[in-house]
Structures are given as structure tokens and as C-alpha cells.
Image 1 (cartoon, rainbow over the protein chains, first blue to last red):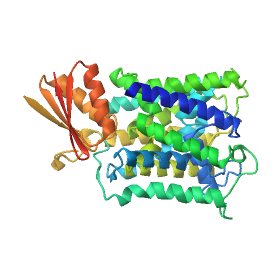
Image 2: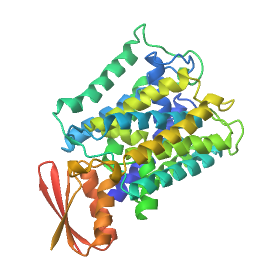
Image 3: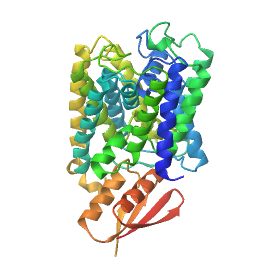
Image 4: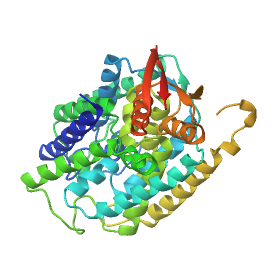
Length: 356
Length: 69
């Protein structure tokens, strides 16, 4: 099957499964949301104490394990790292901050659009604008440096952590939190969510599905290849929402959303800006982490910690709107990413190293 | 004449950006080194979209993409 068919098929299946998980019990318009689910896991582990968003979401370890298994099968698994890991941690942190001010990762943004949540239009514009700004730096030589092959053991860490997280989810030890109300209390059956996560992980690894890459490649290369995946998710989710009477167009009273347009725009501006500097959206970082990319794993951990801080510091938005802390964090995050971008331009790299 | 582009260990979209810049600055054929299939596929797609012919030589985890213009 050629690559275009793979990416379209992946998008369609991801779109269908996302709505299916909502029908089976996941929160509305949150069949799959990488940012929300990492946030829920952070809460379940007690890294934040927002009582409504604590649950071991099996989908996320499913993405990582699905990518791990299929990359092993195709001989594409190999451990690598060393491309500015700490910088990637910080960028991952702020990608999550931006996503939680909007209330969703780029994938949930598409799912919200497909459910008629017009607030996601502003988010999409912001996401694209953030990618556009990041590309100014990339076109002028922004680089986080090369990664190098590592001992395979490094690549097994994220899959093993994923299995441990799944065991915590299954046996629910007393130190794991589980919301009794709010989005964290709403979930599809564990096994259905895990299987969906595995399928999405496998398909996303094969197709290289990436929400940030979809828009980036249009701006940079006029290449619509990844955008077909993006469009297919939208088309499948929209069709499913209409069939199951889940399409409610409008700005107001959308589930787990707010209507503060400026901050929907700026939140996803930050997420898009960070994603393009990292080389991929939160979903893509999870997939790469499963394939043995320890730099993507560090970005993932940055997102996990970012989610915890976003709730501990009152940064994350709620349906009632965006707090002053959230607004400050988004502006601060945009400034931090810009400083990082400048610090990683070619003229700031030590010329004596000979190469970047 | 072949110009070498070493794109090993670079994350997306850097490998394609390097190839694109090399194409813009010289008329030479390119020999691009990459170490993952994503970069390989992206460069092959970009080269074909730019009207170039590509040949791939695999050696273990690494690939050499020969781009003839």
C-alpha cells in the first residue's frame, strides 16, 4: 500500500475509534487526547491534585507500546538520543501548558472541530500561526543538534514504564488516584481503551501521522501528504458525530471547552510553536518514544511534568475560562520558546565543534 | 559530481530542509545520508515532488539516498 493510502487509512481509523471511545464512556470530544490523557495520568500518579482529572488512561501507554511492537517488527526500533534533551524537556513542558490552556492537544482540536466546537477554529489558526513562527527559525538554521545511536537498553525504558503504568491501572494500588467526578471519572472500559491505544500507536508509527507535521509540511514544502491524515481524522469523526447525533455546532456550552477566543488562539499558538521546534506533535513524540527515541521520551516526560505544574499552579483552563496564571504562563512560554529558538541558531553554536 | 549531505540523527523536518537548501544552492547530484526510515521516506517524496530520480542504498540502520537531477 502506498504511503498516501496508509496515512488516509490511519486518519479514518483514528477518527472512527475516537468517537467509538466516547460512545463507550470517554469524556465528550475526548475519545483520544494525548495532552488530556497525559494530564490524567499525572493526576493518577499524584503529581497534581486536581480531583476531577486523575485516571490511568490506558490509551497513552498503548500508543507507546503499539509503536514499540510494530517498530521492532519492521526493524525500525533503535535507541538513540543526545539531541538537546533538557531543552526538549522544557519545550515539551510548554507544549503541554499551551494545550491545557486551550483544553486539548492538536488531535483533540480536530475532534472538537468535527463535533462542531467552533472554539477549535481559533485554536487551529493559533496552532498554524505557532508553526509558521517556528518555521522562521527552522528555515534560518534552528537545530537542536544530532542524536546518536545508544545502547538498546535506553530504548526499552519507555515501553517498560508504559507496562508499569498499565499494571497500576489494572490493580489500582492505594497510591493511585482515580476521580469520582469530572472528566477523570469518565472512561471507556480499560481493555477497549488499551486496544485502541495499541491500534493508534501501530498505525501512527507506520504512517508517521503528525498534526504539527501536517501543517508544517504545507508551509515549508507545499506537501499535503500528512495533511491527508489530519483531514481524514476530521472527515471520519465528523461523519461519526453526525450519525450518532453528537454534532452540535456553536461556540457556547461546548463540552470541556471555554469560549475565550484569544486564549484558545494563544494556547495552541504555544503548542504549535513548541511542537514544530520538537519536530512533532504530542502524539508523534509518544510514538517516537516507543520507537527508541530517548529525546522524544524526554519531551514526553516534559509534557507529563508540564501537566502536573499546569494544575498545581492553576494554569490549566476550565470550562469557566482561563485564569490569570494561565495567561501569564502562555505569554511566558512563548517568550521561553523564542529564547530557546535564538539560542539554537547556527551562529550561537560553538564553531570549533565543526558540526552541529 | 556528487555532493554529500549528512542528515543522520536530525529530527523532522531538518533532513528535508538540508536537502532543499542543497538543491537551491547547487546543481550537483546529491548523496544524502540518513539513519531512519521517516527521514528516508520524506526525502524520497520531496525529491520526487521536485522532479528528481532517487536510488536508495541500505546499510544496516543507515541509508544513502542518491538524488539525480
